[in-house]
Image (cartoon, rainbow, N blue to C red; front, side, top):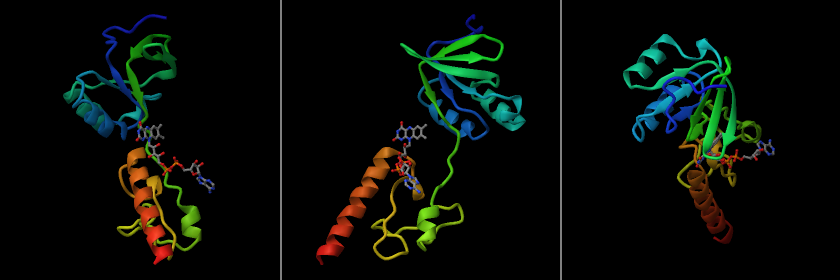
Length: 160
Ligand SMILES: Cc1cc2nc3c(=O)[nH]c(=O)nc-3n(C[C@H](O)[C@H](O)[C@H](O)COP(=O)(O)OP(=O)(O)OC[C@H]3O[C@@H](n4cnc5c(N)ncnc54)[C@H](O)[C@@H]3O)c2cc1C
């Protein structure tokens, strides 16, 4: 195993695929050292490679495996070389799993997210939706906030 040429220990890594570019550009506002990792050359289109190159974002498309290290994460490439990163972010996209809500008759948007009002209430009376099943920023703090809004409204409705 050897460190790859130009390996910078402070690098950040972003998942795989073209969708990773958006995330990588976001991260590049916080650090000039961002690398995108994929497992096949086809993970990154020509336009993605060009856009990444223009922003100084490196690409390795031969990721074999990632392992946690005491001070970050080690990526081993398919040829046995290794690189160390401070942090790794998965940018694999997400699949909306709203089948349960859909099955109960809740209205969903074309992308599959449950449609809610300002109280997080779905189109089914008394059924609320929060978190990743609702179209918003997919973050824990958002899910918690939405849960608080839904719980407060449900409480008010029950005690009205
Ligand atoms: C790799 C990764 C890294 C992330 N990092 C961050 C981060 O650093 N900070 C941050 O804020 N957010 C992060 N997120 C996003 C965050 O995890 C989500 O936004 C948050 O967990 C959404 O909460 P939720 O309750 O909507 O969904 P979930 O946490 O996914 O909970 C849904 C639960 O419902 C269960 N479930 C689904 N369908 C059924 C069913 N039919 N029957 C019974 N149970 C079911 C699931 O098993 C799951 O336990 C990350 C997400 C991923 C995938």
